[in-house]
Amino acid sequence: MARALEDIEKEVLSLDTKGKNELLKSLISDLDNEVDINVEKLWLQEAQIRYSDLKSGKIKSIPASEALAFARSNLNK
Image (cartoon, rainbow, N blue to C red):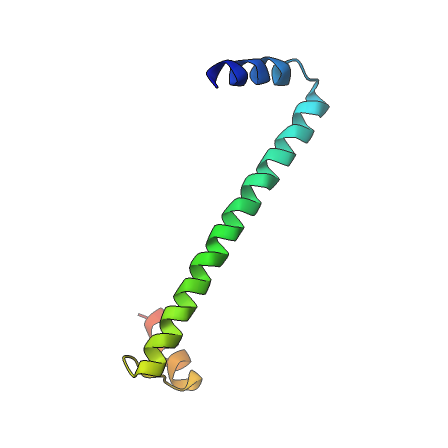
């Protein structure tokens, strides 16, 4: 594996600036997509937990106006 990476690195370093730029954009885009998928999965899990807790009575909901008032008062502190 290390050898393959060395070969890839040599190839990349031989690219002109435009080629390196295009490759870098592609790699960053690929990483961004992977992160987005993981974040989306985590938020879905969190939503499912919160919904389950609400349905079981473990937590109670409050009106949006009350939640916003609470948030605003904490921002002013």
